[in-house]
Amino acid sequence: MAPPSTARFGKFRVLLGDDATPIVYSAPCGFTSKSLTLTKDLTDVNLPDCLDPDAVAWVGRDASSLSASVSGEGVLAAESVDTWLDAWENVESVPVKIEIEFPAKTITWTGLMQVATFTAGAEQGGRVTANIEMQSDGELVRVTTPATP
Image (tube, rainbow, N blue to C red; front, top):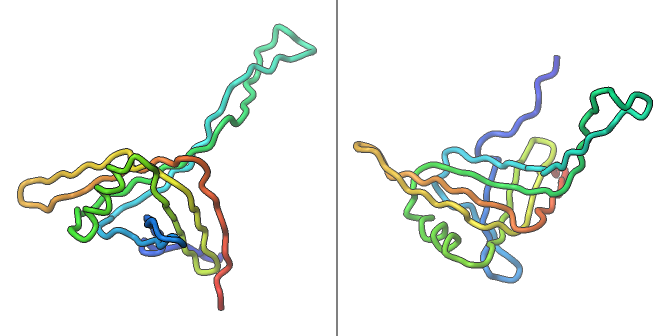
């Protein structure tokens, strides 16, 4: 049996872009967990049996739209709080790059996202934490790049 090739936490990067040309991406500090959710909205249609109209119909599904969201939580780092707040306050979407680096390849999604939720919290005796959610604004383009030897 061959073990799977996997990626470690630090090889899953959520990067925000600036207004420069070309865009410069950097990863805000503080996430201790992060996720990328890819969603496909579906519409349902009943598919009748043409030979037996009284038979229970199967449901067919057609894709109607794609969406992506990024969630992250961790400590609220002084080095990145202004970056997150600026992105949340911005009426425009912000450039985002998401990377997952495997040993043999890197998968990258780039596009625009809105910072939909910024939550800061704390518990007595602990540190201030942040929970951030971003939603795609249009297409995220996926590129797979082989690792260079």
